[in-house]
Image (cartoon, rainbow, N blue to C red):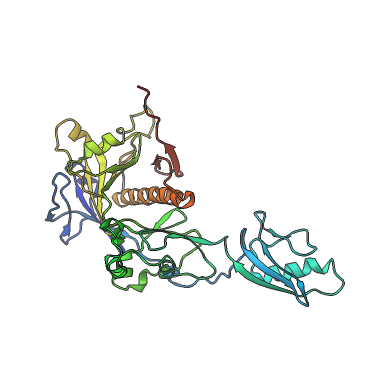
Length: 383
C-alpha cells in the first residue's frame, strides 16, 4: 500500500521538494481558509506497504514468560496436581524442586527440563503432565472506541481482525441502534485515524479498507505488545506537538487559529545559541485528514507573527507540529509528525488503561531522534 501525503506549501518551501512533482491533481486544503479547496498541487508519495511477512502466521512456537500459569502433575500421583505460575525471575516451583528456569522455553522444552531436574531427586524416571492454563507474558493492547477495550492475552497466532473481535468490535451507530442504547456520535470509532504501533513504529494499516471494504491485505498477524487504538470519530481537539514549551491537546472552538493553538502550548521553544534544538518557525506543519492519506500544509509562522501572512484557521483533529530544525526531506518530515502523534496518543491511552483512570495532566514531549519522555505540566502560579 502506498500512503500518499497531500501537501500544500508556502512559497518558501516549494524548492525543498523539487523533483517530487506528481502529474495528477490531488485534494489539498488552504490553511488560511475555513473550507478546503480542490486544485492542482505538489505531492509526495510515501512508500508505505504492508510487509508480506506480516500476513503469514508466525512460525515461532509459544514460549513461556513471567506470569504464565501452568497446571503440572506427576503422572500416577494425582496429589501432586498443582497450578503454578512462572515467577518474575522466570522460574517455576513444583513439588520438591527449588526453582527451575523456564523463561523462553516452549511447553515441550519446559516439560523436559522439569522432568530432568526432578529425576535428580527421585528414584524412578518421572513423567509430567504440563498444561498451559493462562497467559500473562504475551499480550496485545486493543483500546479506544470498542465495545470491550482492554489488554488481551495472546495464546497463539492472532490476526488484527481476531484482536478486534476479542474487544467486541468497534462501536458503530448501527450497533448502538440495534442494542437500543443511546450513544452519541462521540463514541463512534474513527477508522481514518485508527492505528497499530509495533515496537514504537506506526504500521501502515488502513482500517477503513480492512473493516469497511473487507480488504484482507490489511489483516496482519500481531506480535506481543502491539498497540491498537480506535479514536473517537467526533473528537473536537487539536494536537500541538514538537518544539513547543508544553505539548498538549487543545479544545477546539470555531475561532481557533494556529496562533491561538500555539499560545495554548505556551509558545515555541526559544532559540539556544549554538544548539540545533530550537524551533524552526518557518516550517510549521498542519496535518489534516486520515493517517493513511493525510493532508499537510507547511506554514511560515514567522510571517504570520510579523503580519506578512494571514493566520491559519484550524479544524477539529488537526495536528500542529513545530519542528526543531528545518526538514531536509518532506516525506521523512511527515513520518516524524505521524510517529510523534501516534506515540503521544499511545502513552496517554496506555496509562489510562493501566491506571483505570485518566492519567494526571502531562504534555508528551518527543524530540526528533530521542526516546519518548513525559513532561509534567508546570504548577499553577501562586496568586
